[in-house]
Length: 417
Image (cartoon, rainbow, N blue to C red):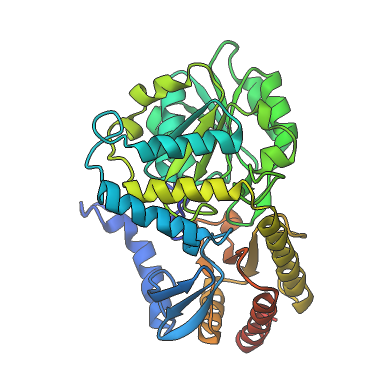
């Protein structure tokens, strides 16, 4: 979902000092940031894109820069049909709704966007949220409350953890992608208790996929409902771009699919699709849906147009897979340590020795004309520092080769390879 690369996904306990200063709990983080900037490195969490030229290029620090950290997987942000739909909606409906979906905030475009989602996933119900974060926050907190149990992967996104906390359910984490650990947790839940298992198709830090088919089978055997977040796979993975659950042949066994418009769809917003016969009641009981202004008409118009085009995006999906294989194989050959042993998604994570050298490598790549994400602890698994690359279907084969040359020069200059 929406990324917070400088924030932890799982909640981290922070303690205030005796001074009563409510900011004192952030002192270690403030010092870490100050020390990093004092070393002369540009702030990797405050980069300004002065002009965006295309889905794969922008002007950063006055220089034409290849974008390899935007999650714009299918390159839909500059699609002419998508842009025109947004312009038409601005002309016909204005700039915003100024209201909640349950009041004055449902326009024709919101219904059309939900119809596009239902058609895309071949499901009965679709509910659009103002962000992907709110989709997880709202759905999870509403369906699992006090006395219920949520079993979730320890590497789950921050929006999933926050949804669990908001609903006040019992939270039961298990080791990342460990089927046996999931089953052990499910066996310990009291009989008759409400159970929700929350999984992700692609985990955004390392770009690895979940063994959904096996995990969903285990969950169903123990009477649990299943929610799968397909934020980083929707549009790309699967024969029709429906995500990892489709690719592994278990989409029909998923109770709720969560996704976002800020990745492959190329705009902003979030959604949930479901076949549950009682799902429509969520529109009246889900607080992050009821008490939030709805998306502007131009946003839902671009989203609906993009989603319908993604239904026929087979050629783009094939090219993106080729890009992923080329980048992953090339970086491995150069001697970099990657988060996965083989390409599993459009995310290729390069593991750095520590934060200081990771930041130096990030800056060296930026000076080469390449932007990637610097992800650091505690947001990352096992306290790793990562340079996280996200490929786009609009990257040409030549651009990927250029990127590999940039990594080689920067890696040698910094002493990573």
